[in-house]
Length: 484
View 1 (tube, rainbow, N blue to C red):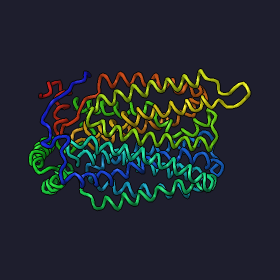
View 2 (cartoon, rainbow, N blue to C red):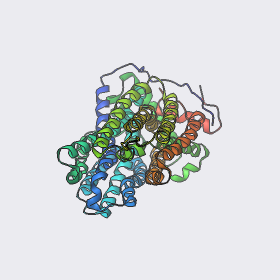
View 3 (spheres, one colour):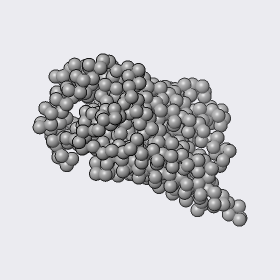
View 4 (cartoon, rainbow, N blue to C red):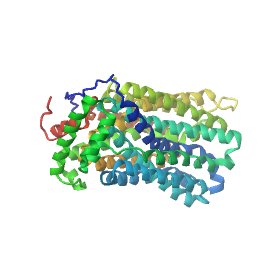
């Protein structure tokens, strides 16, 4: 597949225009992305909690991997279920349900009496994490104006990394003040608070105009557009939505077998590829196992926990950079910068681990090596969180057609979480058999393949309505020339 750009009608509101509706759209984005905050906290908190729960829960290397990756396995199936149900029940109702599941999972993991219950409730949390990953970006993409969609959807990534940073700070704080051996349960329980806030907030939010239109509720769709669009944009966008929904209605209710249609199959495979490359950099081996990696290279537990906070801070700061850049640089260049930058950093960390001795001649730990590995991780996260990850969620929320968006998004995010699960389970084994340098070299080689995929396949979608993007891909993958 060759990359093609396409030019279609832009929204009447230019990228720098501001309207009285913008504050309401931002409120919607902030509340709904509390799901991303929970996503980040629940995936990040385990990195520190693992250092302390092992004795009480009698963890082995195998069960440690299960505790970490069970959430990811649950997330894969949560994404599938939420993607399908979001089309029938609505994006808003699914997010409200996910808030309840988040709270149940957080309380369950905090009270787990043994490793079996811990794994079970991590699976429950995974259902909510995966569901949020599949539903929240779609909810924002469908409710945001085209000229603000990039910045608002990438808020999901900002909230994810903010949740991870909050988890790292919480872990270090609890350990410093009370001692992690006795307070790891509180580390897990705190996630209940944003879950309740998400549930309460979403009760007052509307569903998306495109979902209302799919259900024939055009008056409600128009009311949402009037609250979230400039006055001059409402009529033409409503017309676009009605025309696209009418075409989709003639095709019948969305079903899995519709993916056998050649153009949809190609588009779905593209979505799976976009989802997979974000994980195949090995980013979550750093996010989940950062304290473990830093202890492996010689830092103490206290130093490893404190240094991990730097991962969270850099992730948050660089996500702000990504949000700023996505509206100015475009999707495709950012993905390419992120993928290539991450790949170079993986080889760099591998070389540091391979070439530099672990200890000095007098037996002391080589702290220069420790801090160079940490530095390599921080530069890696700058490319990952500043370029690759935000655009991944944005592209996935944009490229699928309205009628199939829930099913396709669920399937693509399922692939993302399965890749995440496999990598997270495999990383401790890679460390055992290949060492740190070998593990990072392996991810670097995979990253080269990811860069080739980006160059050949990733499209540019900036500044287009969702309907315009749908028409473009239908023409392209049906072997017709896209309309200019």
